[in-house]
Length: 273
Image (tube, rainbow, N blue to C red; front, side, top):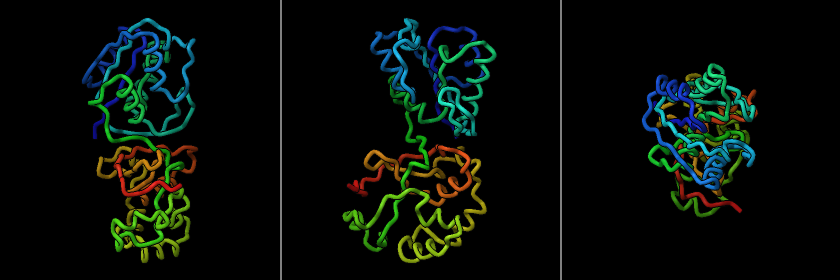
């Protein structure tokens, strides 16, 4: 599967630019000569951490060049330079950024590269390149929520969503699907027998546990990605809870299990006050 990423060149560097063009399939390049306040906002919008006014990326008068590239969606675990987080990134883009900085003796004041699709979407939104924004994003499974029903939604149909007492939004580690992996099988068996009678099945789950290649999950095709909907501005898994449970179980060593997911707006669930 392919995805779009961006290199942000904060100042001109001929050798760096040539290296990007030599190493990637470039689909577009665009330069921005911005007023100071506009530049400051655009730069800050794409970073996780606040960029102070004294930072050269904020006040520089050099035009900003955004180079959009198309790469394979191949993800692996790396430790980021700025936030020092160990997390999943697009390894082709991340390794190029790291290696080119070392090779050319430059740093973050010259180049920013999008580590994953969430960062890509931020750059494309900030620099008004909507044609490259996708319905993929990155979600921390430790912070995401899952739906636990108290009634069988397949029997009630859409009416089941009208009463918010029919379901709860819980941490993934509080759900029967995760507890099954911790040896608490009876809870899951009872749940799929009485509640989730369509999508879940113990035998299917056991087969998934055996065959699911969790190490390659982040490089999955679109149809195989976990789907989330943002409810009350928080990510809630609406498809893929079994896979999410397996991922958490196998990546306990990571403080943040930030994985690639697909956004699928679901307007049936109500905000729970």
